[in-house]
Image (cartoon, rainbow, N blue to C red):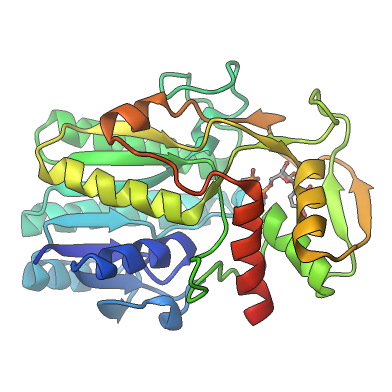
Length: 323
Ligand code: UDP
């Protein structure tokens, strides 16, 4: 039985990956500090409630458990917060990843899958953006991902690890069985906030910026269903176990929807109307982010299954009304 260790496995994306791994018979150890995740979302495996800063404890889990692969989701993810509290981001994301990699080295574990982000591209010059685009983040969050990718590249060159870094675009939706879903305490993401407005939990939805150089003036994003992203992790793991070499892959569908288009679809799916207010631009939002996904399709033979904004919103809505 394949043994894997998942950091951040109680969080939104991590818990969906744990579900897939568990369904497919992997033996799973999860490390999570529960800062944003929930133990209820860990459907398989053993959960260790632990912060990655506790290197000695992480090391003893690695040594005892001996996973073949580490999937590293744990990290702070709120862009605006990273601008206000950069040190928290550098410490939690970069610092703790270094500690984890040191512990892996000591425990002789050398396969690593990393949760990176389209934030590494900043405001891309070419759309859809390929992995070869220049890395020029516009916020500390994005810089933490670039720095970690750099560390991984150097370790790989030194022959210490092989890794796959997955650069996520806009992850949304929930498990279609409705068992797990997004679990943010203070959600900032568009689809979740729009659903909360539809539910009446928010009095209105704000659109941040309506004069972007896009078809309707609002930002365009490549929304990818969390289960397609989870599948990409599974394939990346198989790829590494088959001896695949280190690589960096975009995770998106290669198409985009504007904020207004998302709002329309949310109203359609939920059959509810809600108040929408146009506001100033949010700091650090690129106008358009769409993935060039040629590479992941080729390298991992990844085939998107849920490429439908309607389906993404339907699964997220099902989860939202249940909770
Ligand atoms: N957005 C918005 N209202 C909200 C939340 C987000 O207009 O309540 C916009 C945001 O400015 C961006 C897009 O929706 O253009 C997607 O934002 P989100 O936070 O979901 O993801 P990001 O692309 O920032 O990672």
